[in-house]
Length: 273
Ligand SMILES: C[S@@+](CC[C@H](N)C(=O)[O-])C[C@H]1O[C@@H](n2cnc3c(N)ncnc32)[C@H](O)[C@@H]1O
Image 1 (tube, rainbow, N blue to C red):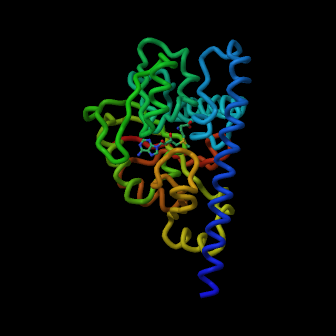
Image 2: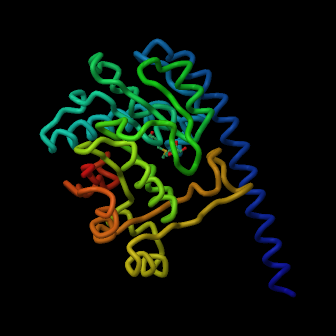
């Protein structure tokens, strides 16, 4: 009885803290909108509003959002280069889970021969991209496959910080779908939360991760979740052995680069057989 009273109190405290956080995010976001407006001429392309930035980046400010997007874009180019190709050599490149274009916006100088596509479950982000970033074709996909693209549509796909948020069932469904929409020989760059980030987990969770090779960490759901994304979107960790043994069922693994994306997430370079 005493325990359930304590539990109820704890839930109320958590809820109030959540509401306070939600409110303060909204206030800060309004202030930043004014700052963005003042700085609007400084960027070659428009910058999404603070709450959309928060959705993909976990922070509101524009500087960090733009800086990390640029670094990821450069890392994608370097990682693709290790396969003997340049990113812009490809004819059809898909940014899977593109969010509001934080990364793809840096490819505005691509040649005509390289067509860019961005897809995401997040309608708000895609609508913003459609209205502000005329450098790609934008699509909304469902949280489970299929996407609208025909078999073998792409010769390059990258997904930055997307498989870092899917449970194992969704991960396999999307690996299968990416296999379907890519051409034989296509190159993929996908990122994961690898070894350097395992310290974010407590000991018990880490043991489960080491045992199975994947750990899906459910943190905030329902009223406690403020990123505007669905509850299935949580945080996933992978071991390198798991990637080698399970992802190789879908693609040939060309390279595994620890902290290869923005010196943070591990990057896996794959080839469609
Ligand atoms: C951390 S954000 C990264 C966004 C973008 N790749 C970037 O680096 O800015 C993760 C993105 O994955 C998207 N996402 C999650 N599950 C997805 C799915 N099943 N299909 C497409 N996008 C998905 C989310 O909506 C979100 O925009």
